[in-house]
Length: 90
Image 1 (cartoon, rainbow, N blue to C red):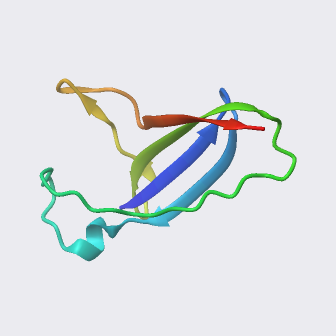
Image 2 (cartoon, rainbow, N blue to C red; image 1 turned 120 degrees about the horizontal axis):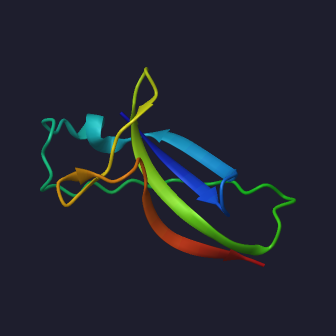
Image 3 (cartoon, rainbow, N blue to C red; image 1 turned 120 degrees about the vertical axis):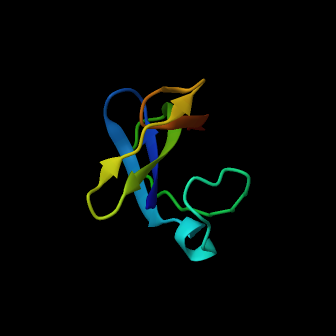
């Protein structure tokens, strides 16, 4: 299972950073939701990125199939990413 960060300004993805998650290294049983495991990620921005506001999203996918996992909201699938914050590029 890997972690994915994406910076978007609409449909096109302008920066993408996939990294191995600490969930496997922590040895947690599947489905356990009570633990907090910090992970740090670097996201490289293209040098010609247009100034403006961008959305930072995160999600999980299965390795090696690269199948994106659904996000559950109120017991229902709510897409395949979680919006974290917006970022202003000047």
